Length: 101
Image (cartoon, rainbow, N blue to C red; front, side, top):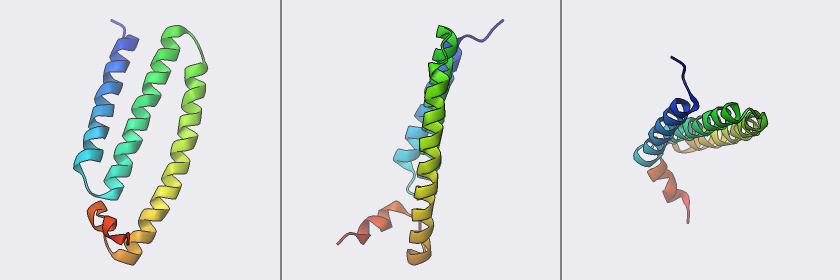
């Protein structure tokens, strides 16, 4: 029995839903970043599965660019979270929204 692209798409959809649930339900900025990364990896899985099914390398090229953007997002996002945590003592997003004003 072989695993076809539909199974990978189903797995990616499940991972994406878990990521959305993490972003919408959690209030900790680090967990939200991890959930966003999970969603990006789900999209990468769909690119790879579609590229493999079509016999094309463009899916792998797209994954490369998504990984580069994700790495830059993690570096900048985590630097901001660490700076805010040192200053405020919390990474709760609800409390950080009080900073405007």
